[in-house]
Length: 635
Image (cartoon, rainbow, N blue to C red):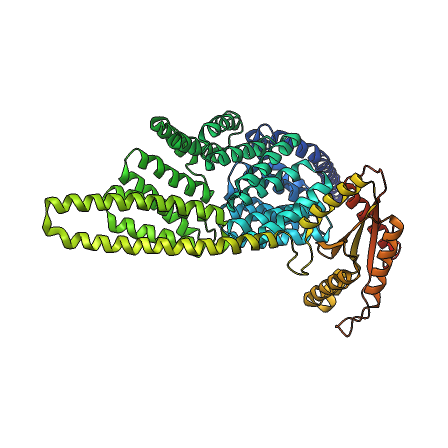
């Protein structure tokens, strides 16, 4: 009996030893997996720039190890996965991966920038699938996390994402503000990838606003920055945008070789959406050039269709179908062209959040052309009327120069239509006098339509002047405070510094930041915070000299430009401003005082500092003032 008990104890002891051994081995394996994970991610990210398919395959091969990773490493895994899915245009999978990563991130003990990245990735996948409001919600969530961590690069990413979705929904003023904010951060950080991204989006924004000259400058800058960063796929996108700019300016012979260069390089990256888009534009270039080559155009549109099958990006399919209709119309295959336009109309209806003004114009214009050529004059007239109505409705958001160009093209087409209809009327009258009533009706319709065009001319001329003045103002003035905005400050600062160097005079810069501003917003509300910023702007403007310039740099930061001012004089001005703000009586009863920290930087005579360096120096000094206890000036 005793012997049997010894055996049982020995057996239990043996099981315990084995369990401890297996547990220790599992723990050791988990440790090895987590220590190797950083190296694994580096391998995937390096492969991402040269062989995106290989990067995705390598990532998939790691699936069996996910549960052994720490929570933060699991979040990182899904962030990389979502990023690669987006680069291969698999937006639904990207959305799922980002959502999974955010779900796991809820178990983290403290916020991490990975949450911001995943929010941006999920937002971009929604934007690509046509859900603009969902995209904005995720971008704002990601931006909030980035701002809480003071992660400048990711704050800029948030501004870029919001800027993009705003121009897609034709909120150009908001887009311009966001992208200019991002550009300042990108220049301050000297980050090539970030510079490439913001320049690319600014190029697209100005393209939407029909400013071709500015647009192409941003695209070229974007291409150079992406090349320096080694980001081949993004560099190709910028190159494609340069080619598109040539297309829009009817320089088809210059566009074609650039598109061919993109195709040659993109085939190595296995991105069907990019390749399909380039083939579509190659087709259009051959169809629209001075001596059209319709056979080649049709071959390219067929290739584009093969690559775009299954593509999830709604704008890519919309653009393809409109341009396919152009090629088919040029080949006089009118029924097929109208079928393609019907598909485009359905896509526009399904994705009503994104306005797609350019596609709307082309779709209606092409429909009216086909109806006219197939002698369906009533339908042609109705579509052309819709075309004009659309122009009127979008007037406040569209650059007037382009509208004028569209108007002249449209007027020319209508003159041709008028001549052809009159010619037909004369021949029919000669052959058949009984059709007089029919022709009178057509003539009445034509007179009514010409009257509409004349009225539109007067409206366009009036709105052109108003729109140009408005665009100049919004590009220079901060909406909240009414003082100069970041972009205007950068322009003025560069000019003042050049003048100071030319005259060998002093030039100083103050960077002012409201102390504890987040606490003011949290305790007294954002309306009070906004009122304080407005009051500070008004107070500072009253203190500034005639040649000084004061403006809002962003958030609760302001900049004062002081030409012909030494560092000592700048200090005296800064102290006067600091004390004025400190002694100000604020409208909020519970708010005893508001303080500011001010940093100074100066360009002494014969100094060779750049304006960007002066901003950086003032920013450093301002933060030094905060470290020393706030409510002070430092230089």
